[in-house]
Length: 328
Image 1 (cartoon, rainbow, N blue to C red):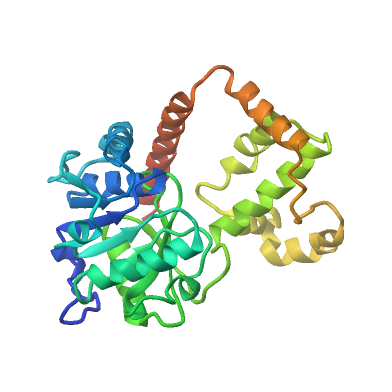
Image 2 (image 1 turned 135 degrees about the horizontal axis):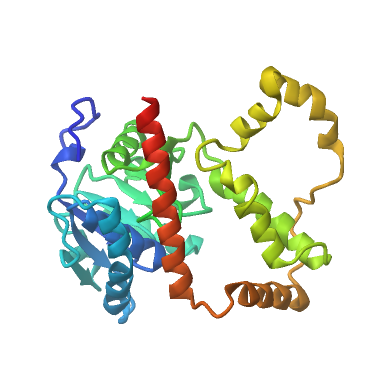
């Protein structure tokens, strides 16, 4: 963890380098992944979840994530046991210097929970939501102090994927957004600080477009689940880890770059290739997609596939990190 003396603070807002204790509110797949990541970075985690099985569930999540986190590199004080699980929200928030909320995507639940967190968290503590779809403007309506509420939207699994999209609501203090961005960077995350609220954020919207077209292709018998996956993993997916879709098309324009690309291929944008409206999720389409995934999995269990995914992500990240170091 690095010291950043330029981090904006108020008298009640702790500097990122001084934080020792984090509250994770909601410890399902995303919240549990966050908890594992915070533990690996050397923090104390106080977790809250109303489920009586939450403790066992988060323990399994941490145990599953720890080998990958170890391979990526643990902080000096990393300890997978440095976590407590609470059913009393006030207890989980007591002493917490940052809050990551990761409750289910139910708007009324988020509104009430964020208001409750705001009521119990210490003054000045920034509260971030992992929401993948709601804006902070619509979630913060019941909170007494909405100025400290921000979105810190991770990509799954948050213990491996570095991306976090940060944005505030209409009532959020810009200083809280700036603080949150610098906090996530302090943690080692790759942060996009959004200038404005966008439904679905950035990465989800791009992923959703691809997902919808894939469903149309299955629904129309144009491609199988395995063909769709291979078209990405052995095609454009190999270009995207280092250079995203925009820079990829820039290179496709040759010496003329993106300007040539747009001038030459711009007319084809009007070709009716893609269908961004979602297809009707019929029973037949559902069964086709499920069966296709089972066929592609070829007997590998979900834990088997998770372990395979984690190994691949780590390998890709390590290669990219080395390429960037060589280029520096």
